[in-house]
Length: 357
Image (cartoon, rainbow, N blue to C red):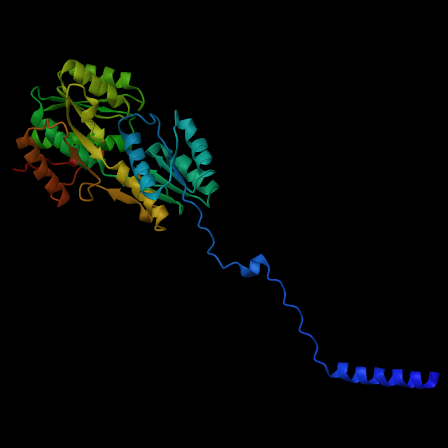
């Protein structure tokens, strides 16, 4: 009996083995997808735009050069949806540290003023992976975009206006620091006056600074005592004092860099030599944002009357229309090359005034 049971069990085992050997293996369970596998591919996030400006001495509130530059940066910021940063320089010794601090926090650092030249060159080397912009001088570095202005041409036009407006035949020029760039304002102004009024006497004084309205007022009053009745300034915040003196004493002041007629309480700004610093700073920021930024001396911009980088503005409506008509004729002569406006002392010595009727 035992043997029969054993034989039966062996037979059943053999049959079971045959059937299971023919069976197909069960499919392996599908792998559970990971989050990385299911997520759709995404474009790498673009870095946010970041830029800022370092002011020259005088800082914001000078109603002139720094304010105009900041206007351009802010305009670009509004268009791009970016809040620009600003650092103000109280003295020249602040330049390099301000540039370094700004470069560590933004991609593009714009500085305004020819006095930044050395500090900008050093910072451009130290922060070679960052971009910089500088106004009123040229820094020959691949990561520095430069813009200069033919301030002598704009100054020539206000010189024409001054020469035709003066009653005393004495006009004045108040400069800030006696550097070649400011000298170009002076020389252009003198050439304009001489072109329409060769008998006029031109008084020249420099404050030695750009950030002292009291000094500007003092120099203007000194020139007034010498019978100057039209005084042009290229002196930054010192010009606020020139305009204050004009308000108090009744002579004509000529503003600079941006239209300064609003700075006179008694409407004593005859006109202003506008220098489109705002256009330069705006263009630098836009070039950075549009990936069209080009540095180096070969790409530096030089903006004059032809490029509408400088000009004359009369928001106060104080220039006689007949005088402004003559100014426009002289402007056309400069633009077409009939008149080449001097920018240095040597050039004005060789300059021959051309009468335009």
